[in-house]
Image (cartoon, rainbow, N blue to C red; front, side, top):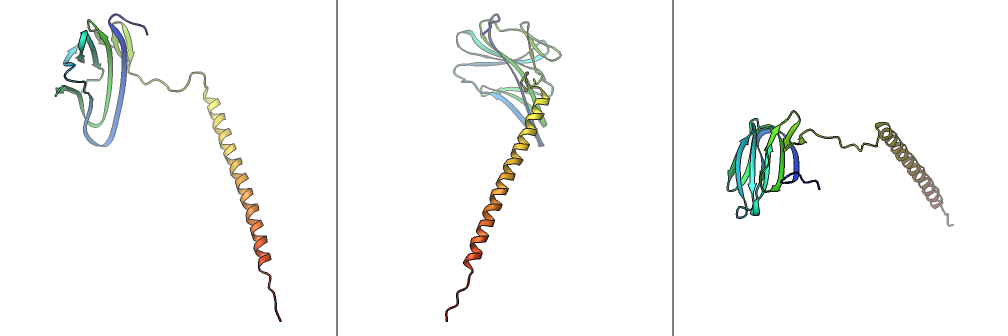
Length: 177
């Protein structure tokens, strides 16, 4: 782990919610009220929250997209509330002990004590896999699936023919005089 000043960990979160009904969206943290203290604020034109714990420990957070957001701290539960058909919460947090860090907004995220964090969604495709190889794998999978279905069809057809021959032999009539 690379330690930056008093920061032990930096966390960047992007939570997106969509619904066909307009309603309140809550993003919340509920630490143990006996162990922590929550403070809400605004620093460098970015909405902030600080959850202070024992021995000078803290979790400080910055809401990148604080437009139309309501902060509250009722019953020692931190809530960030948005209203509408969708909500997009972009939050950067730093965890550490001692003096809390400062942050400012950048074009793509938040800079926490000269450590840039981004709120842009990163690609989940492995860097070594090229798109053409994914297409080849998909086509090969489809062809193998078709081959398996053809083999199953042939086996079922043979079984049906065998059953038809046996049932024809059972229909012989015997005449008793």
